[in-house]
Length: 181
Image (tube, rainbow, N blue to C red):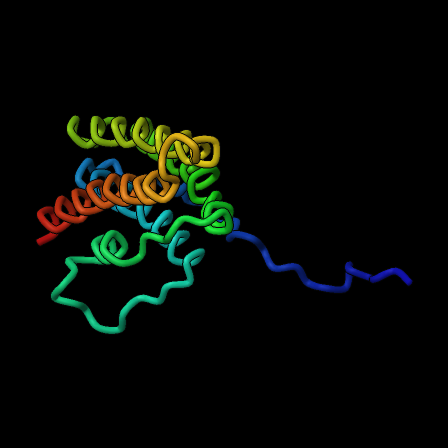
């Protein structure tokens, strides 16, 4: 059975009288800066969302005067205890997710090089090095059980990554607030 398509009227993809209008990105440095800061902020939240998903924690329904934001809550209450099972459970956060985060930060420093302030670029470069160390040292935890307490190493990796990402996300938030208020 062959479908007869010639009887169907096709809809034009664009009006022949009107040439297609190319989509242009804004050339306004202010808009590009806002987009850059938003991207920096969102990249940090990807790792946080992945952590929350793996941990099974639910966010509190009301804001707490005890914590400034979820980053502080994570540091104060959500650092998992070490066990071989937890090590395997959270390994994707320190392998693929940190590798992706590193490449995303690197990409942001290139794509937005003209609008990112020098201190933001330096902070992202430093974060890349810290995330590289966190990813590498996470892999060392099982091999170092006879040298150092794995629970201490495990917790330190989480705290280190959370602090780095919290610093970058908060800085981006504060810059955005100053620019749009």
